[in-house]
Amino acid sequence: MLEGKKTRGRQRIEIKELAEESKKQVTFSKRRAGLFKKAGELCVLCGAEVAIIVFSPHNNVFCFGHPDVETVLDRYLTGNHSSFSHTTAAELMNRHYAEAQEELEREKKRLTEIEEEVKRKKIENNGEYFWWEEAVHENMELEEIEHYMSALQEMRWKVGSRLEQFRMMRSPIDVSHYLLVY
Image (cartoon, rainbow, N blue to C red; front, side, top):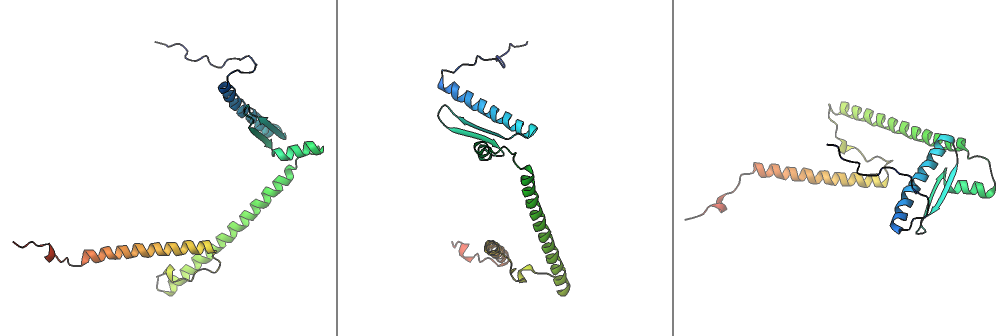
C-alpha cells in the first residue's frame, strides 16, 4: 500500500518579511549559507573577486570574500581596478612548494647518512648495533631532546618492570609463612 506524500516538498514562497523570530533565524542561516556557496562558485567558475558582508537579524556580522574581504574592499575603496595578482599568489605557493621540496631532500639525505652509519657500525661490531650507544645528535632541538629523554625514561621503566617479572618467576617462593600449623 502506497502512503501519501508526507511533506509538501520544495515550494515557492512569497517574498515578504517573516513575522516569527525563530523562522527568521532559520531562514537567515540557510539563505546565508546558500549565498556564500553561490559566491564561492562564482569565484571558482569565473575567477571573480567577491566580498559579501551580511548582518543577521541579531546584528551578528558574517563575511565571505575571495581572495579575502579586506583585499576586495581595499580595491573598491581605493579605486584600484587592477585585478588581484593570481601570478603573485601562484609564485608564493611555488616558493613554499620549492622550500618544502628542499627540506624533504635534506631529510632524505640525513636518513641515508644515518642508515650508512648504522651499516658501518654493524660491520665494526660483528653484526650488532646498539642505538643507545650513540651520542645525542648535535642538531637536535630542545623539544626533540626532551622527547628523547622521556622516551628513554619510559623504556627504562618498562625494562625494569619486565626484569622484575622475570625475577619473580625465577625466584623460589618461600611458602613457609603461608603454612598453617594445627
